[in-house]
Length: 153
Length: 173
Image (cartoon, rainbow over all chains, first blue to last red; front, side, top):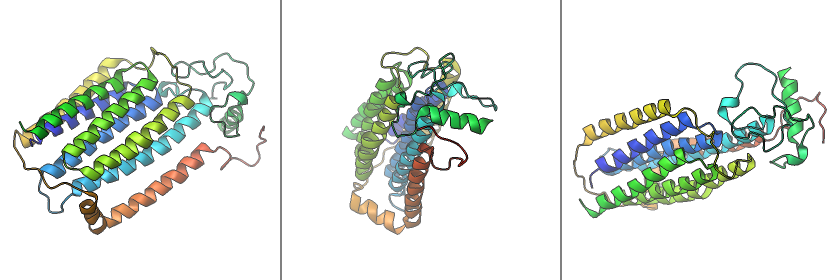
């Protein structure tokens, strides 16, 4: 086996992941690109494990397992954050996040309006659309939005 | 070129093509489905590289759990079903940095390994890997399990707004 082959594949895959992280605006797609990068690292670990005689055998495969666990933890917390963000702002576009302290936009802009790009809920009525709450966990999106407004005040 | 080399090249081509489609497709749902193809091909690469247990864990955790979680997130955030035009920023800076990172890493690794040939080690079955894992790497293993528990609790706390809410607020129900 020539180890240069899988090493090259892993390096190119990492480059693809970097491109995806830099270019994508949807936070879920961003996480997918991060997964590609983590998998490239795993591939490098496993290839190094197969091609280099180390003092501790199979250290690379053990660390690949650790990285998989870390990726699972990361995706769990990341998706919880993304869903909470969507509940507050009706958007998952990372470009739409205000970094300064400003009052959040209205959360009543309707579910279909600009869920990827564009400012969320620019001109909708102010009613809390708890019926449209995507999570369905009992606490309505409008209520969470008013929480956010209170925190920001 | 041996059989392992041919298999590696073929699976790598599949993984790279699917990965490229993940970051370039205009359909949010299709990106998740292409991710399944990419991760499956990488699991096949692990099998070729004699990492048997890692390959099956990859199939179980990534293809089975992570991708399903990602697709759930896509559905819950009301992603558009059809193609959407505004998924990407301006492409050339990202393409420049990504290509630079990929080419740099490729040059580094090829320079380190050239076209050398190594013999395949014996397959890393669950027994052999578990031996190493529970002798040499016991402490990191336990640490990782604590971290996983903390991440689980954290995800629950983050996704429930009624935990840690201010008591003075009135809530509509």
